[in-house]
Image 1 (cartoon, rainbow, N blue to C red):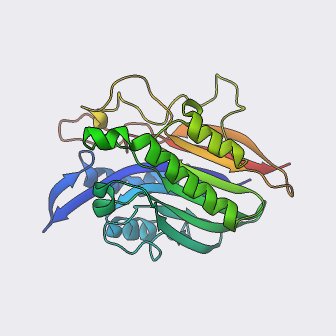
Image 2: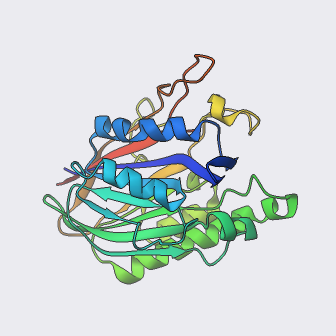
Length: 284
């Protein structure tokens, strides 16, 4: 019964001679130091991470967790210094890894952190070979008004590209997960694309009292100055079940939202402005 975690780490930074020129959120080095222990505590079988930028951040994290996750994808496949920031870690063998930047994205993303997808196949003991696509779609909120207005269309095109990759290359059960930067349930275009391709939200059939209500929290101090409102779903795990074996989702929950990173003023912070999302799959 593989347990799959997706988590946007928020560890995007640009440094020159050790000085931080840009950090997507404050206290990136402190948060990075707590990431490996936190992932160990979760103990997922497959870990899909986003916003591990620059490349050395991915290399260091994979090395820190090598004893637990002997297999990985996203380092050799995404060799640009400011690459997609995607990393997949697995307890089980990984094959056919490929990392692709999305065809449609903003100039800023293309230069300093291109949005993209990381596809690979994980050889699980319970479900056999499971193709997994780890994606990070465009946000649009940090850009000028004209580009913000175009964000939904770019996002739909990016998700369509990821679906096309999954449909063209893979048969049987496929997992498509990561930071969608939207809730497809509230976006008819994206929802229609996923449904037409046979993908279902892993949390869709859960009772309301246990269904994750949000994976991005505007009350998180790391989001100071960003959009206000209630927590919302942006991180998702979608599954397209194969016929043999038939796959069911037995549990989905949010985690990695506890304040564990100390701050100079003594008030701890969560690891990221996102929550992690963990799904358990089983063959019925």
